Image (cartoon, rainbow, N blue to C red; front, side):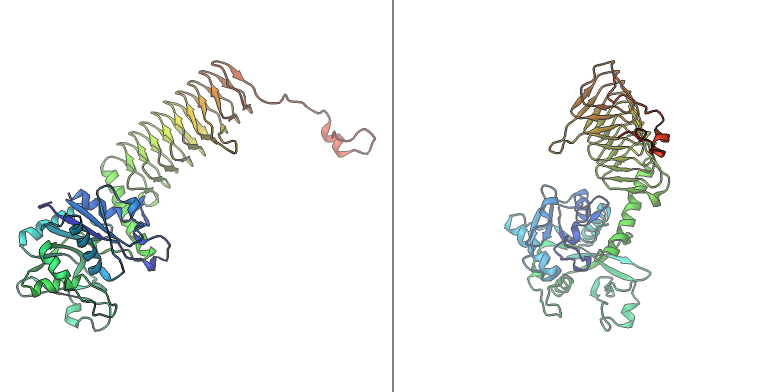
Length: 455
């Protein structure tokens, strides 16, 4: 930033149009609550102080990073009232200061660190008491128009929500107010103290502060930003979906520019905190959630991954489900219809297909046959299975935890293993086969005494 700055994020709106019990800014946006997008942008821009305005219920407190101050707006009295609550909080904390104050909205999540820095620089260069970020739109319908005077300074912002709010000439203006501002702190304090709720909604509107600053002889400027994402506020779930599409596109582009192949971005979901190494390929219909980390040279095919770690050269899918706590070491494989949860799969180990591995440690170069299952829950507690290196399990093996399988051991197909298996042993845990001769004929003709099917 060009100077030490306070950033205030207005996030106390109830969001009734979301039709949700969850506060609007806590709705998920690509893996994190919406409010954290502007919070991270402000921190990335080097904010000296960061204040988020919340309702008295303090719903945002659990998700905010350390060092972010929370100001409470005691009643819903508009954006001006929200900013007043923030300034009161700063003054009460003894952190008021006279530096610039950046104002963002918690429901406009796609603001970037670059845009914040650019706006602060423009504010500093102009020497103005207030600078708004504006955008030029081909279709400005519904947005407040920026009316400039002959010197190019902002004369006023004309709202266009109802017929008669603006003249026909004003409606022709393509420059709109994004709702992102930088203020001189002393000018802002003076203006906020004179805001009036003399309007239909009985609320204090922040744009009125611009008029008060001009009335005091201050200069208000508008800085046109190229980033039109600043006008994309989220008021309902349809708008959230539109914003999510743009955020997801940006996430994909970031990974692809870093050397990741995403075969079909339109069918791929990747959360914002996911990390992916160079030369990894993500094939269509894959979803990667949470804080998943994928190494270099991996392949993920048509699978669902959540909060897991994949080291270099791992192969996943198709139709695999890797749940939280899964670790696949280098060159391991989780194949078709494999589910893994809270397990560590060793270097070069393979779980090729149709298996569930939960709460287990699988040694390096082990191969688990089809339909291998770790029965990890006894109805009261979870137990862990330890499978050593170089183990080979026959198909349809179930390990009833807690159980340990030694290095290089084998299991026979169809075994239910309930005891530890020594290294190099073959575990056979199944009933001995018995064939009932002539069963079909006897079942079909049970009329003769003693010749019916066995009980």
